[in-house]
Image 1 (tube, rainbow, N blue to C red):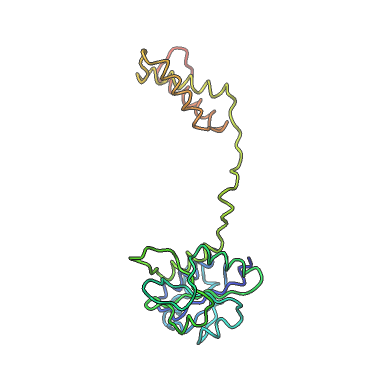
Image 2 (cartoon, rainbow, N blue to C red):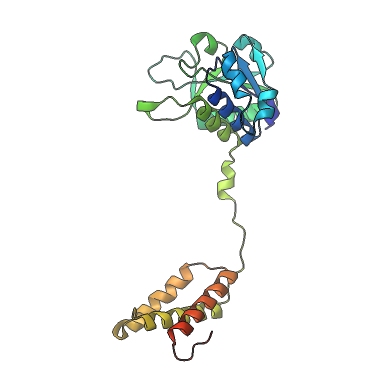
Length: 243
């Protein structure tokens, strides 16, 4: 996916906070092409001071029509809450639509359209779209804030599902002897505190031993715990303990 091929198109935005939030989301996720169709002039002027997204706003392009804003794009995708509105386009959920957009960005330019805060994309705006994408929000409150909608859609484009199965970084494990020393010291602390009763000492010892293994400590963390337990026993004045 080439992020330079994605054009985020805001159609008739009116709130400078939303324009700034959209620009900031673009900067967050590595996109830079912002296009505005008939923006409310005062809102666009105020939005130019958006924190850390000034380079996005400075390079934003203005157009009078959706046709002009999407003229160089081979795929034009609208966004809509759908709801009770009857759309004359295929409507795809964000997860599936995002995968289609990512695929197209490997070879061509894509325009992703967002409508105004009050009305969304009009039927005339949607007439320029190949299909429509929606965020799977609950039916009772399906529409999203403009800036938030841009952020959610762009996150889906950069999200890597395969990262979920990536192997975590391996950590050095403590030897069994260190874990047994940890277990012994912990049991000593529990005896001194009165937690372990003599009549159930054997079963409690097995439970604590299994618990220590389930902690899955690194070698470094095990050494820290050993130091803390020794200090606790020393403070408690346990026989044979040392600082």
